[in-house]
Structures are given as C-alpha cells and as structure tokens.
Amino acid sequence: MEMENCMEEMQKEMARRYCPQCGGEVFRNHLGRPRVFCSDACRYAWKHKHQQPRRWASTRIAVCPYCGKEFLASREMPNPRKYCSHACANRGRAKEKKESGAKQTGGKSGEKDIEEGGAGDDGSSVRCGGG
Image 1 (tube, rainbow, N blue to C red):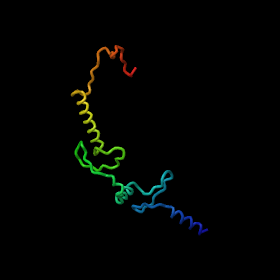
Image 2 (cartoon, rainbow, N blue to C red):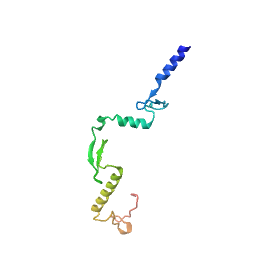
Image 3 (cartoon, rainbow, N blue to C red):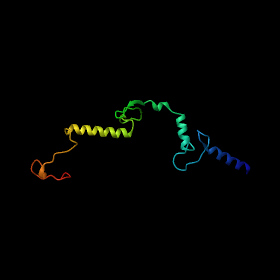
Image 4 (cartoon, helix red, strand yellow):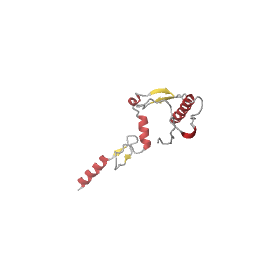
C-alpha cells in the first residue's frame, strides 16, 4: 500500500512543469497548449535573455521618410516597411494624398465641376447610385 502511494506521489512530482526562467512551478492549463513559463514576466525575461539571431537575418536598417529616424525593419514579407511607426505612416500617407490631390486638380483640394441640371452627355438624367 505504501509503495503505491509512493509511486503515485513520484508520478505527480515528475508530471509537474517548472519555469525555465525562475524554476517556479507552472500550473496546468487544461485547454490549449501547455504553459512553459509561470508568468508573462518570466516569459519576457527569458526571451530577452535568450535571443535567437537567426530571426534577425532579414532585418535591415531603414530611414523613415516622414520623421527621418532610423529604425529596424523586420517582418516585411508582403511589402517592405517604409515608416518607423503607425503614426508616421498615417501622417506620411495623408501628406502624399494631399500632394497628389493638389497635383491632379491643379491646386484645388479635390473639388469637382458639376454640370447644372444633372444631365448626362446624351441629355438623360443622371442619378446617384449608378442607375
């Protein structure tokens, strides 16, 4: 009887997981993948300490056309990164749109000339919505 209890205790002890960063016990997650670290803080600390240089192979140094700051451009699989942040990207695209709109309309900000009477080229009436 004692031997069975001892075996059960040993199996429970072997089945436990321990955090690779701090050595603390990792509690089971009953759904999904099993946890590896005891907390987010340990996970971040371990990943910062054990960086993988092969993941940085495609990283390049780029210059943001909006603010002129140098940044590390990585994970640019479908399109190469152009801006250093979302804020610079939004401001840069707005600036480009404004400049391209000014060139197309001859300095006006996107105003269109509308014919009076609402008639098309053949004299038929034109309705909104393509009808």
